[in-house]
Image 1 (cartoon, rainbow, N blue to C red):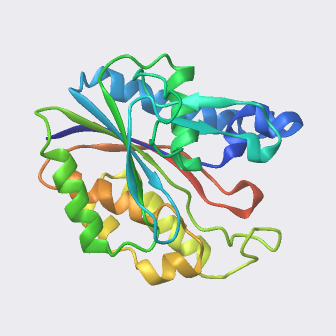
Image 2: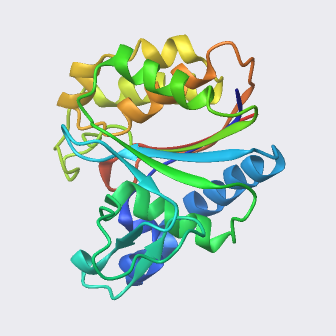
Length: 240
C-alpha cells in the first residue's frame, strides 16, 4: 500500500555540478525536493520505488546499485541508485535514464538508507490506464510503499522554452499542480496524454503511475514548489 510520495522535477540542472554558475537559480527547487524526501523517510516505508520518464517509448526496471552519469553534460560525475552492489565488469544492468540519475543524486545527497530502492523507467507515451495499472502493481508489493516520482511539466511556457511558447501550457501546468498539491489521483489520470506530449510535459506518465498507486490510500498532499524557470514547469509535492 502506498503510504507516501514525493514528486520532483528532473532537469539535470538541479545537480549543481551540471548547472555550474546557474546553480543558485534552482536553490529553492532543491530545498523543496529535500523537504519532500524528508516526508518519504518519515513514512517508514518497506520499499521505495523511484519512477521517472525514460524516453518516448522506453521503460525498464533498474535495481539498487544501478549507475547513472552526467558525462553527457561535460561533468565527470556518476551516481548510484540506493546501496546495492556496484556493477562489475560484464554487468548487464542498464544505465539509469537522466530522470532516475537526478533522483539518485538526491537520494545520495540526503543519505537515503530508510528502505530498499528500485528504479522504474516509464515510457513518456505510455497510456494513462497502463500507467495506473503500473502504479497499482507497485503499491501492492509491500505493506508500506513509498514513491519518488520524477517528472517535469510543460516545456512551452515562454518563447525561450525548449518547445517555444504554447498558450495551452500554463493551464496544463496549473491543473497538474492543483492535482499534485491536493493528492487527487482522479485529476492526475484525467490529464490528457496527447496534449501532454504536444507540450513536452515529460512527467505526465510518471504522475499517472502515482495516481494508480494512490487509489484508495487516502493521502493528503502539499505543493511545496511551483515555477517555470527556463520556460519549463517544475513542481514539487509531498503526499502522506
